[in-house]
Image (cartoon, rainbow, N blue to C red; front, side, top):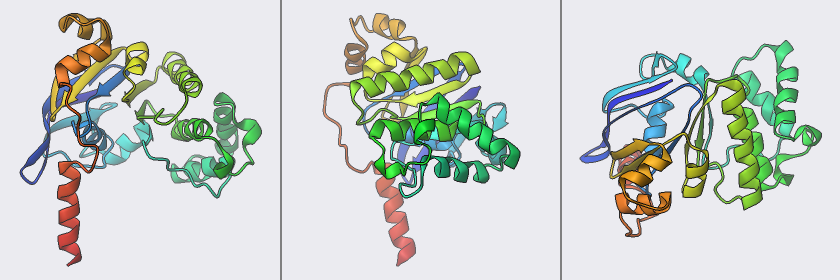
Length: 262
């Protein structure tokens, strides 16, 4: 469902993603893990057509990500790390707006919205303004919105960030059910390593732009002689605290924008 071959992304002299290759199968829950600035977000942005690779090739659902962007965008849904809902619209209106943007047939929109809001247990709140929702409700709405056009792949970029344990567990129940019942491929990032260990079929760990390992959690632990995924992760990536501020790649883009504005 996803094929990444010798992928490279450079920002000036800085290499954010350094010659990585991996495949993700249909219906698989695949976790991409790594410290801040490791290359996770850059990889997702290339997979979702937001960034053009410097080198290498990408395929989603059989389509070339660079040359067939329209078909690729119809193949996936995405829940970004930062909230992207319109808080001054209702849950139904947010869904309706997204449906129009994806050119869903008018006769299908109402039925599809009801199906998905029921799935994430928000149908009874369909006419409530999103600004009245809790963090967990907003995340569930974003997942429902991302599924409107029936994508083959769902990207989740730290979907449970800031949510309490109960809400995180409920969200993963929804996601796991999607993979099983809809044969949907789930590609996600998270800093909660227990989530990856519990939910992912396979785990990829990236650091300094390089892919360190791709394997099920048990194999990752076995290969590093670790008792937990967290222990294995720290052995592979080190224990030093990473800078959570703007990455080198983002800093390079900001400098380029500043030059344009002069």
